[in-house]
Amino acid sequence: MRVRKELTEKSTELRKTISERNTLRARLVRAESSARELSSAFRAEAQLRTQFVDAHAASSAALRARVAELEAALTATKSEPKPSEQVGLRRIRGIGPAYERALLGIGLTQIAQIAALTPEEIARIAPLIKAQADRIQRDDWVGQAQRLLDEGSAK
Image (tube, rainbow, N blue to C red; front, top):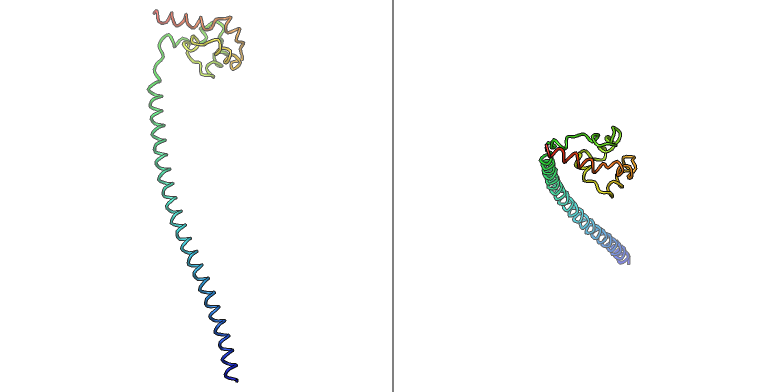
């Protein structure tokens, strides 16, 4: 009997040990799977970083080339103004120093630009230079600018 009792106890211990071993094996399998997933994720991240760096370098180079191209085009389009365009904006009756500064500030720097203004453009720029559109039209800035250009081309 005693042997049987010991055998039963040993059998129970063995089942517990086997159960613990199976639990530990399952945990080990899960840990190995997690380690493989992490390793795969690290490789994917490294690959994505490399792709990003390559793409960034390529786009930066393309942007630098485009900026250089635009700067070259801008430099090429800048040319010496014609003698008729070198006449100051104040040659137009009604444009004094303040209006000239305001016009230069909004990008109207040449007599030809004034000569090309439409009534809609005059209405749009008048508030920007703190002038009345009807005053610009009454003083005939556009007509005066056209005459100055005609005089310059006749010389």
